[in-house]
Image 1 (cartoon, rainbow, N blue to C red):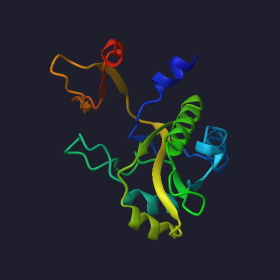
Image 2 (image 1 turned 45 degrees about the horizontal axis):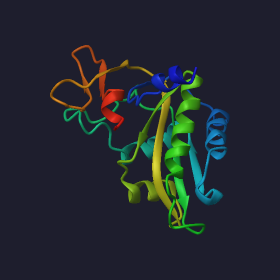
Image 3 (image 1 turned 120 degrees about the vertical axis):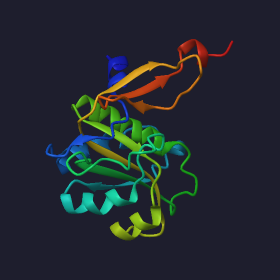
Image 4 (image 1 turned 45 degrees about the vertical axis):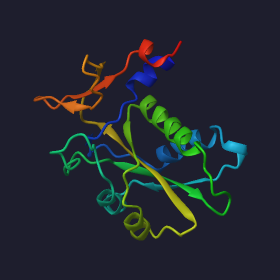
Length: 189
């Protein structure tokens, strides 16, 4: 059921790094992105796949993790992603990528969730450092990085409290809590 798939598709930030992800699995996930909608059907997105320890190590230092968790610098060795998909926009095709990268990222994550994996869309990227590390040509705009792996944390959805605070947090047991607004609060009229 789609509701179950969407509910299980959380932003995971800690993974079992021993669980590898193959290049073929990454290609299957990018295929789901490829089949999604594209503004004016331009299909301007391109993808870089990372799944080897060397390439993953080149990507990781250029990412910022979980801004609300002020005392956490990101996943430690052993709980880092097993793979990444870097989403690029080809500026030779268009200068405006509309929401194509969001659609692609969601399709990728839903596919990953269906396969028992988890991921996190990262937009806080040191883009020039990543560009240099992966030798990405200048005409590709770095849009998003999707971190992927076997989740090694529990994420719990809960109602936003009376104070309206939407910041996610971790409890003493390391459980990641994500407040969500109610359906009635987001539908107007």
